[in-house]
Image 1: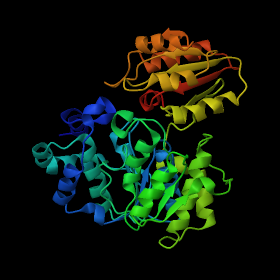
Image 2: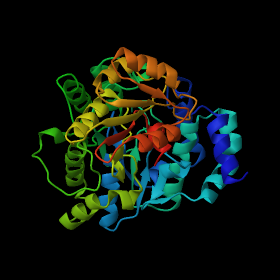
Image 3: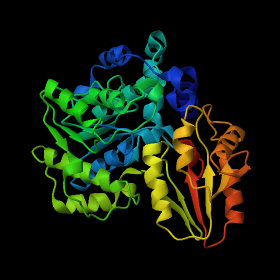
Length: 404
């Protein structure tokens, strides 16, 4: 199979949360454990850092990877989902995995995948771990896909576990209270492995403390550390929290890696060029100011929408699309009624029909037009907006994927 045929087979043959949602979720780690045994346990052949959390996982993982790269290490980075190309998920020092490695890995293991009915995510985790082991990385930063306890990545024994924050997302799998969601994320806390908590609340802190105590894991709360003031090329207001988390993680890595202040500074300044991270308060156009962001739940959107209001503009134009399992009642009230809306459906199976989104938006005083695609909505907004306006594109990772 060619690379295109290989990835199409991976996407269509087996459940993929990115496209399908609920049916792709597995209830235990049996398949992943079978797979790594079949691959001769690649996850034991490199050091790792494990990053979970509702929001900020990708940014935090990328910041850590960028700083370690600046310190001269060979750094693997596993993130999800991808925006344009499947290979974005698996990188070494910012370089995406080669198409040939993906093709060969699937060809060599396809019979095993089919016999054991592995999910898309399980295969991809196996591929990432095999790639990092094969290329002898010094360390890999591994981002959890969803949750923690039952996530396919949760078979590693990392140097440090990280939980960025807890908010409401994927409640159909992770639970409908913050403490239930925290319990799932806390599933990555391992015996005698330090854990860094980025942000906590009265509801989630006791969950983390109890699990850390049970595992005899030292726990650090980055939220309580003093404010930090480093220049960073990730411009979202929410990056301040992620930065504090990253700095606490780095303190714990000092015994394993030689990380100097200059590495921290250059690493934070060059996250995008070092890791290829996209879609985080990404400025697409200066006049009118056009920003896209992958925030897609109330916890993340609140911060992004607040950051928009710090700008002065004549009219706010919002290109908005979501997936069909999104709790609209938790996010639509956050959007300003004064904005003009361009409703669209991201081009994935899970995309919510734009007419339904428009109807639901109307219930919250959000009015605008429906478009056939994200790109059509974006084209229209560029025609309508004046230089004094502000354009925001978001609501879903998959909306952003279509315009970056």
